[in-house]
Image 1 (cartoon, one colour):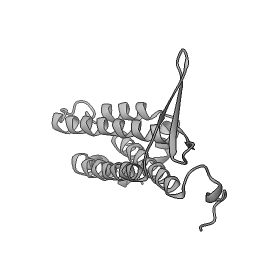
Image 2 (cartoon, rainbow, N blue to C red):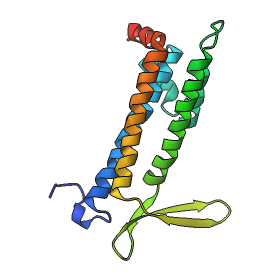
Image 3 (cartoon, one colour):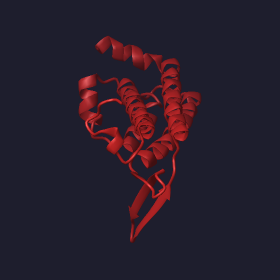
Length: 172
């Protein structure tokens, strides 16, 4: 058995679940970093300025800024095809973010039969909770979907906005 800070055998979840959830976390952090870097490139700012501006910016505000900058700087004519394609990608990002948040922000416990369950709590006027399952194959599928999205996003950005990438590379 591998050595961890907390012994896996004593953990509330099986090792396979822990690994699958970890893959989701890692893939998502790489995806968010790619969105952030794309935002800096479109804004034509270097990494230092980008980090200063976006580190504490919410995910939603990053997407709004990316969408706004995708129109191009005036008096440039808007490329509607690029913009519509980006909106479609951002919609997919939001879908994946919702699914990821559900996994990452749930309280994971084994039920009485020993099966891992996600307990999600809300406190909007009253306390409520839901209990859901997510199997290891379902979790691994989500991590693969996030990975595939990230690759698609990068490919899209490189093809549709090469000027932003080239201007960023010159200042790096």
